[in-house]
Amino acid sequence: MKRLYGAACFLFLLQTVSSVVVPAGVKRNDSPVIGVLAQEVSAPTPGKNAYIAASYVKYLESAGARVVPVMIKKSEEEYIKLFKSINGILFPGGGASIVSSGYAKAAGIFYRLALEANLKGDYFPVWGTCLGFELLTFLTSQKLLLSHTNTTGVALPLDFTKESKDSRMFKDFPDDLITSLAKEPLTENSHRWSITTESFNKSEKLKKFYRILSTNTDGQKEFVSTVEAYDFPIYGTQWHPEKNAFEWTRPYIPHTPSAIKTTFYTAYFFVNEAKKSLHSFSSQEEEQKALIYNYSPKYTGKRSSFEQIYYF
Ligand SMILES: *[C@@H]1O[C@H](CO)[C@@H](O)[C@H](O)[C@H]1NC(C)=O
Ligand SMILES: *[C@@H]1O[C@H](CO)[C@@H](O)[C@H](O)[C@H]1NC(C)=O
Image (cartoon, rainbow, N blue to C red; front, side, top):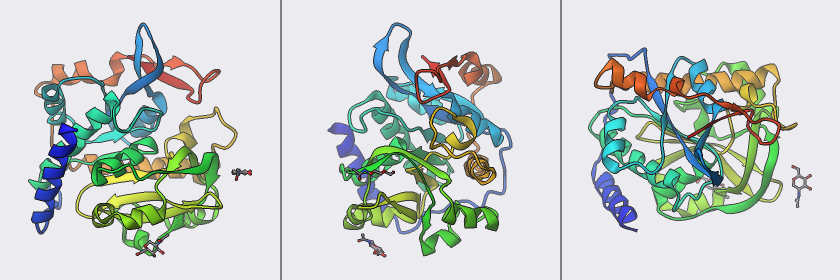
């Protein structure tokens, strides 16, 4: 609980700061390196303690970033060093605990570092997909506010809120893609848990921190499906933008032209956010040692929901 307490103090600090300066980005870093957080495998075996689905890597690469795997169970010092070297971080979907896993602990540290850095004008974007989004709601609210929904394998259109129109995330999406996203089932959902709009509305912390850009429903409960933080480059989707172009293991993953565009424009948005970060590795050698290119993914599509997985 110690870390949570630290986060609580930090949030208090946040609330005392009246405005957060996000730099206009005079400089641009056209060689961004983005961390993708690993997580525990469900049944550890030798050589398979943690994994990253390769689709997250391809997703970021497709829009012009290189990827560094962020390993679980490292020291805070190691995470601080890595934080200063990379230009953004993505918390992927999966099945780890959002309270007690190595995945949750590492994410908590990066989340805190990102808040601190951004407050000082040091731009550092954070993205959470599915479980990563659920984790963001936990890190921000310090409460488990999730409810069960019937959404374990379904593609849905997005119910955009009015606020989505002027959002940073969707602002540069082509109009025809926004129209398709609102009408066609382009966003893949595979989650048992969601944050209902009602629970979100009851949390002062979440309401103050995030603007809701879209919601969805399982027929019974309405849940939040896309958010962006008001004053920080922190983003979350309950749906999986990376799957449309890079996963083929389930019949409900959409692959229409608009679905593929959704993958690309979402990645393009986040990679451009990372281009506003000027962090860098201390040397080219350090960077080369860290890159995902040092690892090879395994073909796992015959037995898992991912076509390829990096094991660590
Ligand atoms: C869950 O949703 C699916 C459609 O995605 C529907 O076919 C099924 O009947 C629903 N199950 C329940 C228990 O509501
Ligand atoms: C949540 O709050 C928003 C804006 O205040 C409102 O439009 C919406 O109806 C609320 N939804 C629920 C389920 O309470």
